Amino acid sequence: MTATSDDSAAAPVRLARIGGDGIGPEVVDAAVRIVDAVCGDRIEWVEAEMGWGIFERAGRALPEATVEILAGCAGALFGAVSSPSHAVDGYRSPIVELRRRLDLYANVRPLTSGAIEAVVVRENTEGLYAGRERWEREGEVAIAERVISRRATERIVRFACELALSRAARRRRTPRLTVVHKANVLRVSDGLFRETALDVAAGFPEIEVEEQLVDSMAYRLILEPERYDVIVAPNLYGDILSDAGAALVGGLGVVGSANCGERFCLAEPVHGSAPDIAGGGIANPVAAVSAAALLLERVSLADAAVRIDELVANCRKNGPRTPDRGGDATTEDVVAYLLAAI
Ligand code: NAI
Ligand code: MG
Image 1 (cartoon, rainbow, N blue to C red):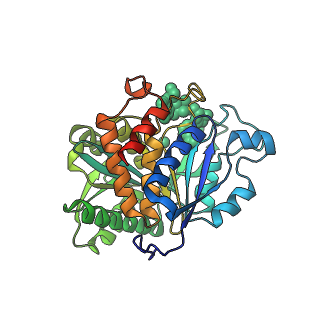
Image 2: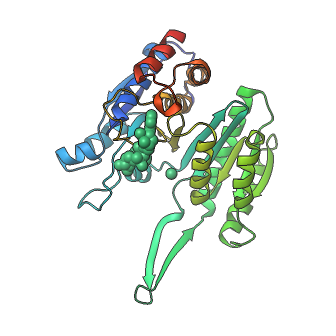
Image 3: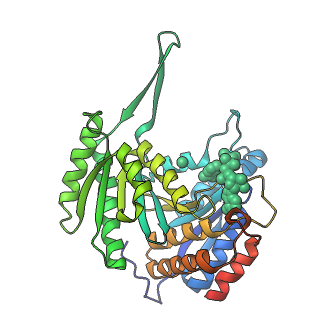
């Protein structure tokens, strides 16, 4: 990506907006209004559909029309989808399918609150989630294989190192990379992850590199979260650390994440479709707005991303609180506060 954001003559960046189900459309709509207020005509939005609603209407949770729209976009802001709790013929999670089809190999989850400014970078394509499960001994034993490849490890660690450098440039602090593994027990697979990660990181001499066993990482993340910067981990460890971290910095209503590939970024709030409050106008839009900032950063609109992060930090401190944050404000109250601050 070489486009510069201060080239005002540049063509607008094309992004898709995918509300999905439940509160998804409400929070995406809110986030798009904030982004447009900050970016003006630097962005062109295209609407696309996926999820349970479109599955019921058209028989596909991820319509080919959506895949085609995304092919013409640099990224997408996605709300949430509802998934049936029982197996439904023909229904597959559209998010999992998109991650695979667009090779969105890096899952990025910033953990930001007060002095905490960490980010978990999770490998998103292999590990224990490679889907290699089978039965043995007539259903008495279940086996899951865990896949760690040199190639996937190299690219996730390179991604994490580049992120550490760009964050450091912004925050004027020494970049630090924490490599998470359990190589003392899983000597072969986590051994390969560890060795490959340290090799790649050695190519970034500006970065202070450390390693941490996953169990003590969970402990220290809760105990002293301020000491972390970029944390890189294989799939399962990263998944668990991301959610533990989300609880640490304010919960589902405020945390965003991004699924990144070389050419595409799908950003989303961490929460689901929240059917219990859908349509009530009280969903907290902050998670979706934070996700939008991640998306802007990935599509070379970093100045707008920084601006939105500042607005969100101020809103979380001084702004109206929706019920999930202990207040009685509406989605619209939060949007109005953010718009007024712009
Ligand atoms: P959820 O995140 O939708 O809701 C959990 C609780 O948090 C609910 O009480 C909800 O009201 C509250 N909540 C969530 N987001 C909020 C927001 N922005 N503001 C205020 N309160 C908020 O998780 P749940 O209930 O487990 O799942 C509901 C549906 O969402 C299911 O169909 C599930 O499959 C789907 N889901 C989708 C995800 C995605 O699209 N990436 C992720 C997680 C769940
Ligand atoms: Mg998760």
